[in-house]
Image (cartoon, rainbow, N blue to C red; front, side):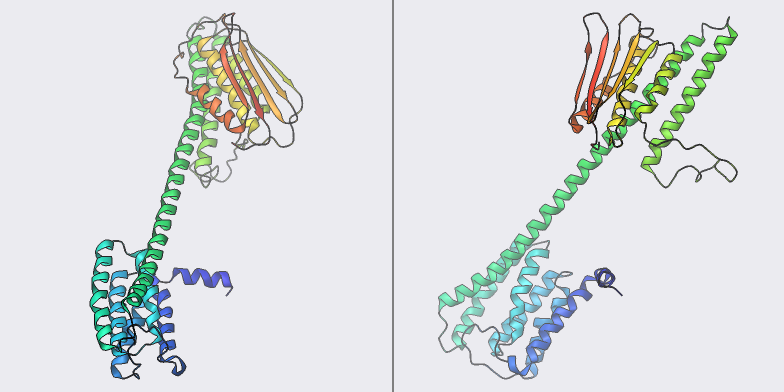
Length: 398
């Protein structure tokens, strides 16, 4: 088994099992002949050899370390009693050094009644110090008892600092997770707005036009075919978006995708090359559109091509909704480091039946392009038309 595999197995063990070796280590060290009587000494009592009561003392000081994170209050109480017995009996074992470790652990992991615990320990230390002073030879001064108390307080403070740091990190991670979820929801809302609004607007305009073509069956059939094609395009784009949310559920995994049924898989991300598809779709909806594309797209554009696609999509959607019938111009220019998009209408058209909106689309584009470090402008001209311009740096990720 590799070291990484062993580490994963160790982390899956219960925390009590992982802490037990530390208690056993302290117990083994405490009974070593060379270390007897060389542990923590408070009160200047003469060192006493180990007896039967020393076994209980060592067990109280060492074995509770196994539950120092599971039950920190129980561990602290038992080890404190063992330490007091160790000092009062004069064993001065190496297990006495477990008390600062337990204080650090309790200061870090104790959840409830923390102040009451500190007060109780402080109150309990006073009679212990008095008893050790009376039982000892008088070599320990009150200042030395106070110094030892400060050492214990410092150990508790270190644990409290670890706890505060851990809580702050947990709050930071929760805040980052919440911000990430909010950003993902906002991005999903933008994508749904871009996909649904454009296709539904085109379908509404095409359906409205079909109402007046009953006397021209050939034109009526073309209009209804355009509505059908637009609906299929909407379904395809929505499927791509849903695949991003659930990559495991793709073509071939759901009903209707059995053996023998093949479905042409389109790119999940719309590219600038597909802008012509938008233009053709808008033309079929009755909007005259001139399309010009200059330059050659670089090999890697990051998310710039998708953003450029969305700019054209939103601008054409607004042209259909608010300036139906207006002459519309779409210009896409590819540079070495950026893509420039300009969509303008001459303002001679009229609002369509789908002319209802909240401005969310343009606001979302401005935010998305701003993230990439580009420029975005949308506004009316002096001739009553409307122009959308965007400069999108290539190579970045949205």
